[in-house]
Every structure is written in structure tokens, then in C-alpha cells.
Amino acid sequence: MTETQTPARTVLVTGAAGGLGRAFAEGFAAQGDRIVVADRNVAGAEETAGLIRSAGGEALAVEADVTSAESTKALAAAAAAFGDGRIDVVVNNAAIYATIIRSPFEDIDVDEWDAVMAVNLKGPWLVTRACSPYLGAGSAVINLSSATVMSGSAQWAHYVASKGGVIALTRVLAKELGAREITVNAIAPGFTLTEASLGLIDNAASYGVDRGSLKRASEPADIVGAALFLAGPGSRYITGQTLVVDGGRQFI
Ligand SMILES: NC(=O)c1ccc[n+]([C@@H]2O[C@H](COP(=O)([O-])OP(=O)(O)OC[C@H]3O[C@@H](n4cnc5c(N)ncnc54)[C@H](OP(=O)(O)O)[C@@H]3O)[C@@H](O)[C@H]2O)c1
Image (tube, rainbow, N blue to C red):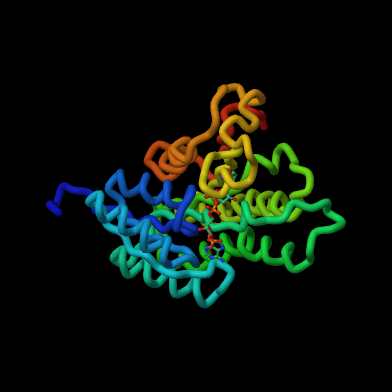
């Protein structure tokens, strides 16, 4: 690196063994950022890191469980060591999503409710808490919510409630981290074509397309673009917000 070059940023993406997480990791890497690929699925995380390295980027795969205080602390320390002591961007993407059993709220299994909350809501809190000592002025935290919070979604009370909690958490973290010039925002994607969501329904590619303003399905690249913006120089005065990325299906 010459004196005039900006050092690469360190971007931590949770749940990056595949799906949107992998797309975020590859999208930031394509900008020259170095990526910490975290997932409980370490083989998938290694695969994502390998893809980034094959494309000429820098990536470190870390096995991590976002529901564990100990594991998230070790993850943050590993990410900071990889990033010369600093973490510039955290993308809280890990979730229990497509494997959730859709049930009327009266029938949701209590253990499943707790597991969904632990990963989808406690996870972003624990990961951000663990990363906090390594975040500095200009750092950005991006939390994955869901457009189902705005629309409601029958038989998915635990998932939708967890993602509503993510929006609330985002606002509190924005208030607390704002004094350190750290932004915290959420992205609420509509139905997006990933391996996980494709398994959810038969007609995934056309699902909901007629109800959107833009008459096409959402691809991971659509969501990645929002994250690059929220972590980029053009959004430094935006914090505590939720960006709905659903092709104009609903307006908030
Ligand atoms: N795709 C959509 O239509 C859509 C729409 C709205 C919002 N979202 C949100 O976008 C994010 C990514 O969605 P996706 O479609 O890419 O889902 P996905 O493929 O299921 O990705 C989630 C990843 O998180 C990992 N994970 C689960 N529990 C974990 C834990 N305790 N610690 C660490 N990693 C863990 C999963 O590993 P395992 O495979 O081992 O469980 C998986 O690799 C999620 O937050 C989801 O709620 C998606």
C-alpha cells in the first residue's frame, strides 16, 4: 500500500456460508474490502472465503454461533486481528429463516420460538456488542430485518416478531453508537431468490411479482446494493433507518 491508498476496510458478515450472506461477502470483496465470513456452517464459510480468494480478494472464515456470548466475542477478536485492530462494517445477516415451520400462532413450538429469537434478535445484539470495542468513527452496522414486518405474514409469528425486534434494536443501537460516529441501519428485503427461499415455495421466481411496482423477482444483488450504500460514504448521515428493498411492493 502506498501512502495515498486507503487501507482496505474489514467487513464482518454473519451467516455467510451461502445465500444473501455469501452475496454480501462477495459484493463487499469486489469493492476491495477484506471479509470475515462467519457462520455456524464452517464448511460453507470456508467455501465463501475460498470463492473470494479465488477472485483475488482477502477473506477469513470463522466458525461462530451468533447466539453465544463467548463465540461472538471470539469472532470479534478474530475479525479485529484480521483487520489490524479495527472492524469497519458489520452485517448481521445470520438467521433462522427458511427452515422455520409455518404454524398458526397457537401451535408454534415454544422451543422453536426461543431458537428463532436467539438467532435472529439476540444474535445481532451479541455480535454488535462483541464488535463494539473495535468499531470506530465511520464504521457501519447493518442488520437484516424483513419486509414481512410491514406486511405481516400469517403463520410466521416468531420470524416476523424477531425481525420487528431487529428494527427496534437498530434504532437503539443507532442512538447509542451515534456519538461515536457509527451508523446502524436495517435492510428489510422482500422475498428474494436465495437457495433458502427457493426451497420455500414452488413458484418462487414469480412469487409476489404482480404485487410489486417493479415487475420482477428480487435477486441477492438487489439487497447487496442497499448494503454497499449503507456502508458507503454517501450514507454517513443516515442512521437508525430501515430501508425496505422489495421492488416497491409496500411503502412505509
Ligand atoms: N431470502 C429472502 O427472501 C429474505 C427475505 C427477507 C429477509 N431475509 C433475511 O436475509 C438473511 C439471509 O437470508 P437467506 O435467504 O440468505 O437465508 P439462509 O441461506 O438461511 O442464511 C442464513 C445463514 O445463517 C446461518 N445461521 C443460522 N443460525 C446461525 C447461528 N446460530 N450462528 C451463525 N450462523 C447461523 C445459517 O446456517 P445454517 O444453514 O446452518 O442454518 C445460514 O448459513 C436472513 O436474516 C433472512 O431472515 C431473507
